[in-house]
Image (cartoon, rainbow, N blue to C red; front, side):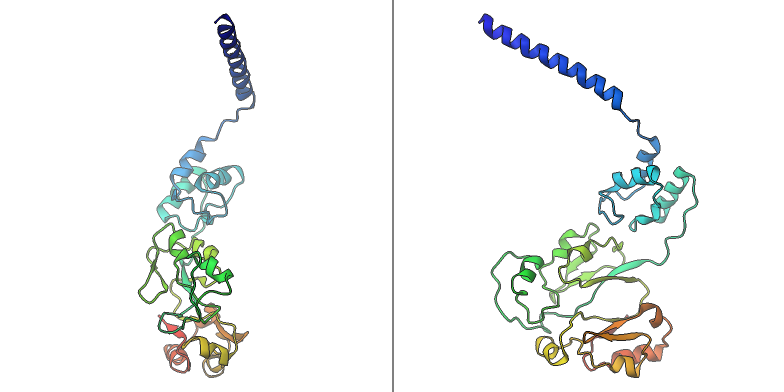
Length: 269
């Protein structure tokens, strides 16, 4: 019994000594946090989405003070909260500019794309993508398992009945989470007032695309030749839109974009 109490006393004494050491070290190396950081974090969304390039809102708040990072790097913050931060740091902030939203560049719905094989593996887009390209005939299109919906921190995405994710422009904050998650790079950030899109990402030749998707771009160049070569560029059998150039198109030209495309892949909003 005596030995047991001696052991307990020894362990207690050792714990007491280490506690004193920790207190001394903590006081010696303690760094007082600027009280502005806590106030700034309170003005941030608090969703820790990482769109600013930092690990979360706390890390971003520290960077604003300690590294003089521009608060406008947070694309999801509201204007009134941005002004709150401006007041705290005593700076005038530039306008955030044109609102951007995510746009899915694919129309490979259940009706438009056939299934080439059954898939029985892990039910995620990434798993299907790396497993021989997945079950759909088009190797560039949406795989419809909704990985993007699951990672969206703002409830701005939902799976539609046609098998494609649907973006809510009102809720989308352009945080970029869906862009990072999609293994086929189908999401792009576009100006919210953008009117015309080529909603396809296939880089297959025309004949191959027509076999895999009813509405896929076949690189026919009609949009560039008959509508506007400055707006529509053809590369790797895929037409893309120069959004800035498209702003100069007339209503008639915008409508021509839709009506002259033989695959009906150009969308007008």
